[in-house]
Structures are given as structure tokens and as C-alpha cells.
Image (cartoon, rainbow, N blue to C red; front, side, top):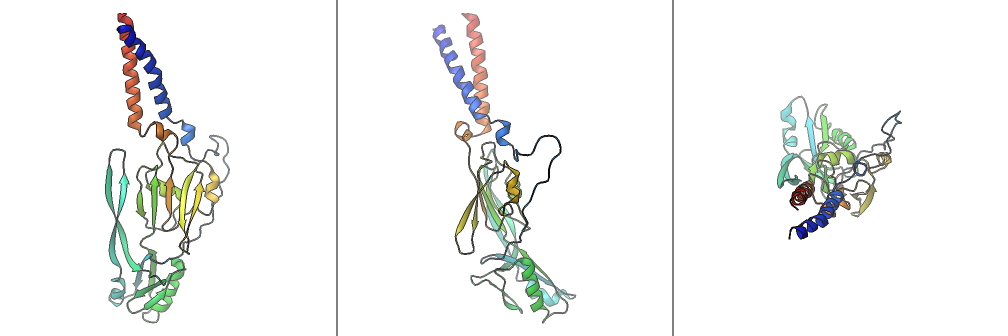
Length: 273
């Protein structure tokens, strides 16, 4: 009986070891920007020219007008109604809901206009926030003496999903955001993520969407026109082949413990025979 059990353990041990090896990824597979040498003189990296995004329909803008007397523009600034949005955060141990506070703002209607008290309807779609600031300031000058105008996105949001630690929808306080910024917000890629085949889906002005493939193992991604994100961009990180072998780190630890236990049993039974 002991001989049969010992024989079974000898056959089982290689299987456990193989599963453990499959579940572990090499360092080379998970490194970013592998074309940067580890030593020696490093060359400069070309980065794409940043182009500010343009305002689109259904965007929400925070529009503030300031003058010497705050009471003069109180009715306009009060039009920035506070909003809130719920996103999703994924941790290794649990799935929880998080609420992200969204800045107040004016909604850009389907025709591309914002409607403001006193100033009326103003066309902003198709312009950058800087251009919209100049236009609104020009109109506000007819009503106020030397006004200061601030226009910012209140709902500049991106979605990050797939093999990241914290997938969800992120509302950002600024409009200059790169792919690396988005991945950092989502807690970085998991060990199972495909770093050379990240999918970016971007909305077009005509209502269609365009997919792009991003290779984070090479630095030339920084020179592409999709390195900097636009509002409503979606980033999907595909799982690699290691995902099928081991779904998380706890499974890899389980295989290690089982393998160690089997090794001890084999030694004990060998001594008794």
C-alpha cells in the first residue's frame, strides 16, 4: 500500500511543479519600455505634441466669472450645480463601489451650446477650453468691468478596464492626461496583462469609435497621437496566456504549498520503506 502511495506522489509532484512554473511570469514579460537599455548613456525619447481636446456635446464645463464685486456674478457662478458619479474599484481581496466627486458645471447641449444666466446661449462645442474662455470673456465684457473667466472640464472622464488592479471610470481634474497616467490611476497592470497589446477606443465627432493598439514595451508609443487621452476614452487591457494557468497570486501560493507538502510526504514515506 505504501509503495503505491509513494508511486502516486512521485507522479503527482511533477504536475504540481509544472503548474507552479506556468503560473509564474518572467520579469521580461512584465517590464515596460524594454527598448531602453539597463545601463550606459540613454538617448532622448520623442513625445507626441500635445493638442488640447475640443469641447463636445454632453460635456460638462465649470464656468466661473470673477469681478471686483463677487455679488455681480453670483447668479452665473451659481449655475455650476454639484454632481456626483459612481465608479468601480477592484482590489485583490474584494470588489467595492467608490463614489468620485465631480466638479459642478454647465451642460453642453446637443447643439453645442451652453446656456448661462445674463450671458445667454454661447456656442462652445468644437473649441478648446482656452478658446471658449476667450469667447465668454468677450461676451462678459459687455456686462462686467474687466471680468476674469475660468473654463474647465468638469466631466473629463476615462474608463480603464481589464487586467488592471482598479478598473473603473475616472473623472480627472485636468485635461492633459497620458496613457501612463490612466494606468497609474487604475493601480497599474496586473502580472497577467498583455503589455504589448493594450486596446484604446476613442470616440469620433461623427459618433463612431476608432480602436488603437498600444505597445507599452516600446518607447515609440509616446510619439503616437493617442499617447495623450481624450474625454470618454476607453482603455482595455487584455489578459495574457498566464491568466488561464493562474488567476491570481493566491493560486500560485497554493501550488507552492501543495508542492512543498508533497515533497515532505515523499521524504517521510521513503524513510519508512
